[in-house]
Length: 200
Image 1 (cartoon, helix red, strand yellow):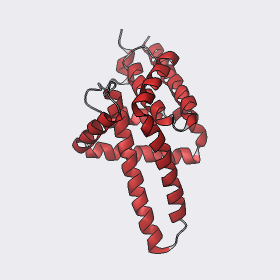
Image 2 (cartoon, helix red, strand yellow):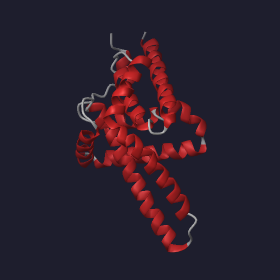
Image 3 (cartoon, one colour):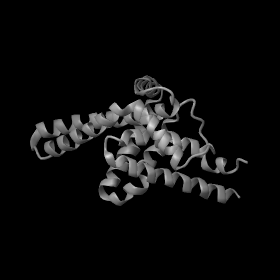
Image 4 (spheres, helix red, strand yellow):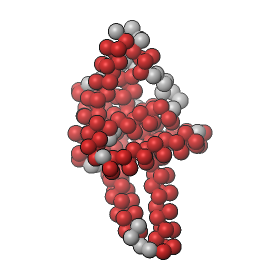
C-alpha cells in the first residue's frame, strides 16, 4: 500500500507539472502558474485533493494576486539573457566586470523569486506585496538556505539549457521541490514522500 500511495503521489505531481507547462506557455502566465504549482504541490504531499480543476482554480487565484509579477518576470529574464550574451562578447576587464555584476543580479533575482514562491505557498490569501515581506524576512533568517536554493536553481537552469527536453517534466516541479525542501518556510510543514505514503 505504501508503494501504491507513493506512486499515486508521484503521478499527481507529474500531472501538476504538465498543467504548469501548458499554462506557462503564455509567458506572462508563467509566474502565476508557478505559484499555483507550488501551492498544489504542497497540497498533494499533504494528501489534500488536487487535480486539473483544483489547479485551474489555484492558477486563477494566483493570476489575480500576482499578474504584475507575471509581466515583470519575463521582461527581467529576457533582459538578463540579452545583457549576458552581449557582455560575454566584450573582451577585457569591462566585459568581465559587467558579467560579474549581471551574474550577481541574476542570482539575487533568482533567490527572491524562489523565496516569493515559498511565501506565496504560505500566504494564500494575500497578494504579492505581502509575499515580499515574508520572503525577505525569511531570507534574512536563513541566508545559507537561500544561497543553496539559488545554486540548485541555477544548476537546474544550466541543465535545461543543455537538455531542453527536460522542460516538459521538470520546469516548474524542480523549483517547487527546491523551495519546499531547501528554503523550508515556517508554517509549511515538511512532509517527506515516505511519511505521506504512510498516512491513512
